[in-house]
Amino acid sequence: MPAPFRPIPAEVLDYYGRSEERSRLRSVRGRLEFERTKELILRFLPRRRTVVYDVGGGPGSYAVWLSRLGHEVHLLDPVPRHLRQARAAARTRGDPLAEVVPGDARDLPFPSASADVVLLLGPLYHLLDRDDRGRALREAYRVLRPGGLLYGVGISRFDSMLEGAWHDFLADRRFVRIVRRDLRTGRHRNYRRFPSFWTTAFFTHPRQLEREVHDAGFVSKGLFSVEGFLWWVPGLSRKWRDVTFRRRLLELLRRTEQEPTLIGVGPHLMCVGAKPRRRRGGRGRRPALAATPRATPAPTPTPGRLGPPPRTSLAGRRTGEHPR
Ligand SMILES: C[S@@+](CC[C@H](N)C(=O)[O-])C[C@H]1O[C@@H](n2cnc3c(N)ncnc32)[C@H](O)[C@@H]1O
Image 1 (cartoon, rainbow, N blue to C red):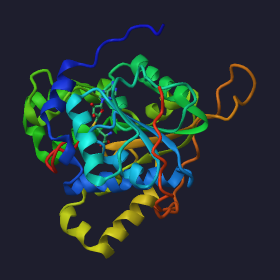
Image 2 (image 1 turned 180 degrees about the vertical axis):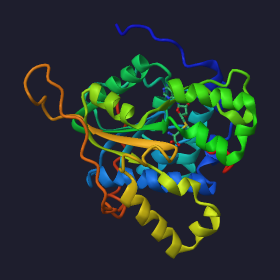
Image 3 (image 1 turned 90 degrees about the vertical axis):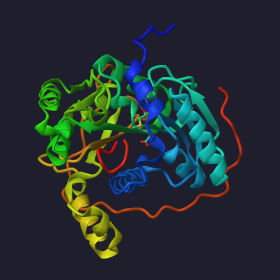
């Protein structure tokens, strides 16, 4: 029987119970996050139909997209409102998800070695303690088949400072106190629940995210900045509509997405990890850490819908203001 763990903080559940997470990815910065996250997912995703567990899947933006591409997608989230929204989104798009279940990333209700892909696009930055993040990562490892892929997203240690500068929150001493603590510990707490200062979260140092993924047994296939410097481009809305300009920005972002001196500049970091097909290096030895950072742009595969998905089931921030 697994050891008990602390409940998800009430303020996190309260925040997502009230905020409009569903529309977050529609703002211009949200669209940048969405497009880049999808691009990074597709870069590693096998072309065949896969079984995907979207853990902390929220209102289902990525789950529904992957289901539309022909994958078998199971979504798990602790917030009842998100589960309702995910079911509704799948119904509206006519691509039902295989399963939408309540739960916690640290104790997945899925059988071992049953998935090809696990998305952790949220839970890792709402678990403050390293033990809890480790537990979520080990659960992802358990449910993946050998060779399966983890996409783990964290938020950069420097995010509140940079957002504070951008939105002028640094004029507020209360926010500066929060930022100092974030920089020191990564533990973002908004005890007084100021509406603009977000909710309880962990802001990771880029290499720490990769280290934690590695410590759970994965081989890192790379650490990427999702939005990079594009997050801070003035007038992004207009530039994003200009297809030539958008391409230029994205091409420069791909060139720098793994550059160690820039990787913490954008808000979201993604570490892609593979569960080894068999443990390498003998008993007890960990697989090697980290792919070497690349400076050249990686190819972007074109998303293609797979064949019609069999209808099987498995037993078993907001607006552009302070987006997340
Ligand atoms: C910012 S939202 C991201 C939603 C979606 N994955 C996306 O990227 O659009 C963070 C999500 O993590 C979920 N979450 C927070 N703590 C969690 C935990 N311990 N286990 C599973 N999900 C969790 C929240 O309910 C929320 O849906």
